[in-house]
Length: 69
Image 1 (cartoon, rainbow, N blue to C red):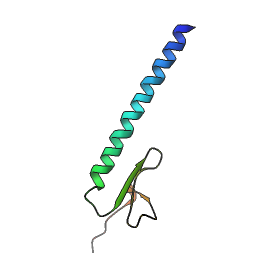
Image 2 (image 1 turned 90 degrees about the vertical axis):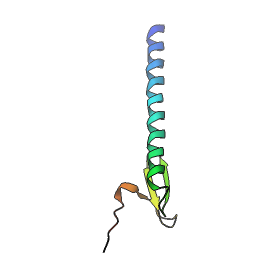
Image 3 (image 1 turned 90 degrees about the horizontal axis):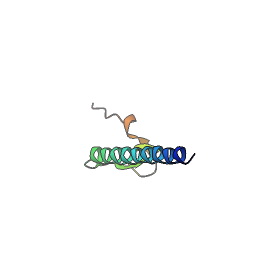
Image 4 (image 1 turned 135 degrees about the vertical axis):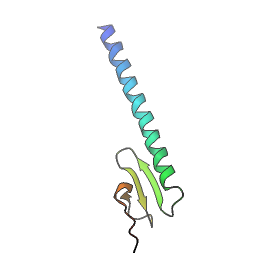
């Protein structure tokens, strides 16, 4: 029983470590992509990378398309 508990704790720790790494990689990618733009940007675990022109309405960054005329 003790070995099973230790195994579950190890699996949980590995899973949390992978989530931690993935979160920081996605956050860094969001920052690198939008830092030089005029848009405000933020990243959240459940919301992903979001951008805003005025700080009031936040849109997922993958939904933004620049249309040239």
